Length: 471
Image 1: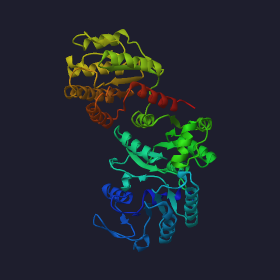
Image 2: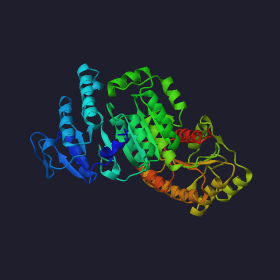
Image 3: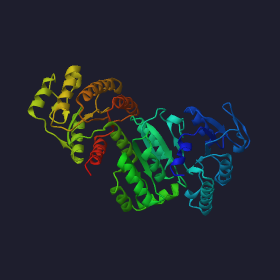
Image 4: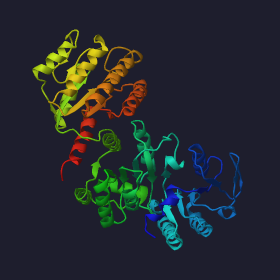
């Protein structure tokens, strides 16, 4: 059997058993995830004492389940896992998610030997294993999840993540900015299913057209290099390599027992593929947003910015320069058109950046000003600045003004088709972060990418432009 042929039991099981379903346990949470996210198949909670959970019978053993079981989620102590896998294989279970920790990541000999035994059982029986020391599978369409507060809707982005905590963050942070996932996998120690297997699977997965991966180490360097090259040739791939420094390598070894490799070796791998390397989790989210909501990159680096606040605009100008973008000087015709739309130029900047008191303008004049900039052939990219806590009015009074700006921006952006991005920043208070979430939703529902700083926006857009350069 091909290594990628057996993934149907992992991503599309018809039935799932969950071990260790006792009050307050991980097993109870995983069972609740299946119910909460609407898993349509059979659910079989397990624990030696039996009992009941939310109206479902808890079976004492996998052997006591009458029907077939495709997938088992393991939440029992590590020393019992080999026997569980043998019983599961005898039952006909095709795959297991080993949430259980206490294996090679401990660095102890007994943990390493226990993991080796688990691998032997899997190889002998043909079961596929995700983990150990992992969170498992998030697949909205199938009703599979490993945490609360994940989107219920499916998307077309896949996430491969060696870290459980990082996967939780990435799914939630990306969701706040409009990203929805086809599948996400937290795979931990990768004793069986590993990063390369998953990448190979996503080459042909017709539900996925963008792949993001957080990787601490690989099991087979040459195979990984070949698969990454093949995957990135057909779909954009974003990679964050954890453990890039000597101290990070030690941390990776104690986290997932990963063989991290040198940063120079990783750079060589990336140079042989089209994968986009990022340096932080926030940058990974920025790149997901950029690939998803800016499918056509700017033709060049001439940029115009528009917003409210002179200091905001000055800092944005510096950030554009530092990112290698040109704040294009406005020609006289554009300046005249802008001036016609402004009731008074007092306190306004009518060059580039553009900053004027929009609350003195009619909605039609405000749209005309945006249209003037977007239609100008002297720029390749339009950046709209929406700082939330740099003005004097209370947030409750100011946010409706920003909402008004964005509504008009969206109308003109759809009309003009110029690559456009929105920066919602200066989030000084908890209330401003909550307001930003609503404004971000307004933008992503309209197909506009949002960022939390000018610098992060331009870094991501610059990477997108390099990705699309002829190779």
